[in-house]
Amino acid sequence: MASKLNDTKRSVLAGAACRTDLRVLPVPETIRVSEAMVDKMVGELLSAGLVAETAALDHDVVWRDGDAGKFTLVITDAGLAAIGIEPGTAPVELPAAMPKTSKQDSIVALLRRRQGASIDEMTAATGWLPHSVRGWMSGAAKKRLGLELVSEKDGAGTRRYHVAALRHSAGA
Image (tube, rainbow, N blue to C red; front, side, top):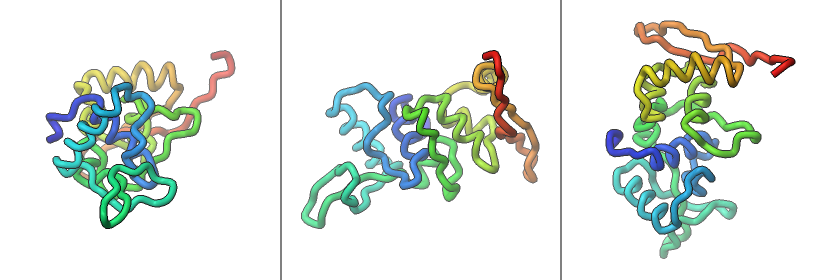
């Protein structure tokens, strides 16, 4: 299913992965499609096992109202894996200043995890090619966002990248 994920579905899953409660709804504000299209797309994610129904709490957006109560949707371990996030890792909340979930937001969230992210994880989360991810890291991440990235090999020999510290530029 990972190969059949379009950018919009990836954004829905990435938005859920960035929430501490892993809720899928409401979808990120960056997704600008009709409500009927969102329902169809989320239904496809549900059928593929990338999201699952769970009992809705009072503050949740309701996906379905059935005989057994109200239900909302959460991302599953398969959904996390489909966007390159290791299942079982704690979700990283986006700062309040960045309410939308873009591809850049997804990569930054991966890089801010304690274990960081590999090129493969970042390409899975964005759909970009490896050279595009490397270009983003050397261009946008370092120059525009001022992120200091550290590259290290883990115990398995996989190169992983993570944010070391934020650089603050007085003149920019």
